[in-house]
Length: 154
Image (cartoon, rainbow, N blue to C red; front, top):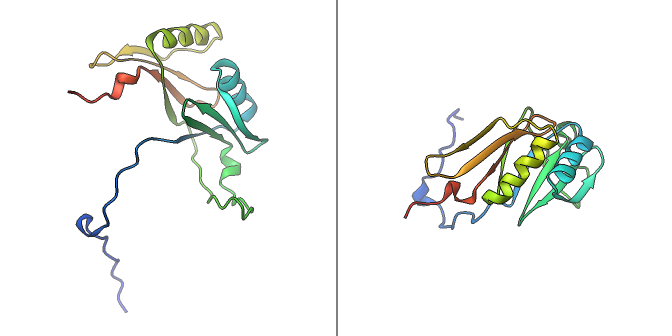
């Protein structure tokens, strides 16, 4: 018997596969889901698509979904064999970035400021794309950026 660790397979030995083409979900964590729903649905105008009181609330964001979980509850096994999602979660503030055109971004910025939400940063990246940063009630760092922020050169 040996205490040697198994070796990771070499990349060249793995079957070929295309990389994922898009991000489908983004998860953030908030203990107060009612405050999160008021912020994301009420202030940002996102559509609530699923809500399990005390556990999670999910919002439609274009073709993707923003998942807001209570960190205490999502670390518990589901107990439902029809939904065998393993326990997961995080503690502390996370980050998510929403895409918006300049006119959409400016309108959202004005709405946030009018609601008393502090804009932590509003600037233009070296490639010219604009971003604004602010926080949700749970302290998650949120960004609204022009879609060209991550555009490839050429």
